[in-house]
Amino acid sequence: MQRRFLFSAALLLAPALSLTSQAAFAQTPTPLRLLTHGSFDLPKELLAGFEQQHAVKLQIVKAGDAGEMVNKLILTRARPIADLAFGVDNTLLPRAQAAGVLEPYTGPAAVRPAAVDLGAGVVPVSYGYVNLNVDKAWFASKGLALPTSLADLTKPAYAKLLVVPNPATSSPGQAFLLATIAGLGESAAFDWWAQMRTNGVKVVKGWSEAYYTEFSRNGGTRPIVVSYTSSPAAEVFYSKEKITVPPTANLFLQGGVFRQVEGVALVKGGNPAARHVAGQFIEFMRSAPVQQALQTTMWVFPAEAGAPRVEVMQQHAVEPARFDALPAPLTEQQARAWLRRWTETVLK
Image (cartoon, rainbow, N blue to C red; front, side, top):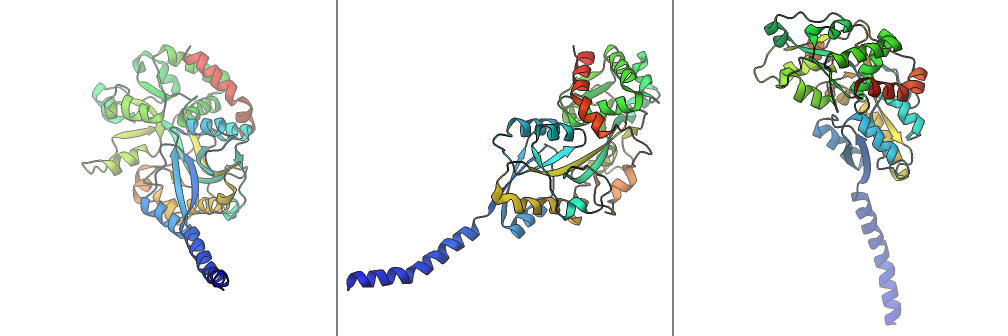
């Protein structure tokens, strides 16, 4: 009798225990691992809203420059450390595709019209232009005219004025290298780089070091830096004095402008349990709030077709009339060889 009562009580308690377990499970958010570069930056309230809406916990891992991020994806492909990757751009996509670390995404954002394209199931999120930025006050103080061509930079008057990120470790560095090849031709481009070595070009690991350490605007000695079209707009936005005229300017020189498109992609071999919510995050990155916010957090143009521009970008981040580009298949075939040749030409 007692045994039967205990058995009956267990039956009565079983549904309650089951409901308790289900509730506990429902309250445990799904982890979603996002690998990205050090410049990834979105408002905390937007990211928190996504987590709450989709019952997910974002685990954001920043891997330095975009080039380092892709290298990390490749090195960990046997045991992926992420479910998603943001910041794979058109300079790095061939390397990622060759290594087989990405999985195509085919949801709505992949087929919806965009201002730019990446192809291969990688969803474009933003784009910008890599080009030369100059410190206007430095040039004014020296009475030196701004260069009007890349050839000008090889002249003695411009010796030791340029700092560039290493294209082997930096996405904007690689973009600028590709621009020189596209705009000048392969042979002439490497001749130019050889002349720049003689004329004292400085090479650093990444964009942050180039812009925030070596650029004269930020206390360095180099008044010309490889940066972005949006950099003058960012200078106005963050200025303590609330300036209305940027202290820096863009140089849109032939062989010195490259359109860089960034996207978000599924990581091959990521957690299957997180695959659905990973797709939701890709859609989130193309949503109107994100497309507006990234303009003044990551200083890029929105990829969503027709997305409005914020005022500071409208005024101080004018898109160049032309840029230099190479066919994607050629870039994929030659990228490694060009990096080796650049290293031998400039650093060895």
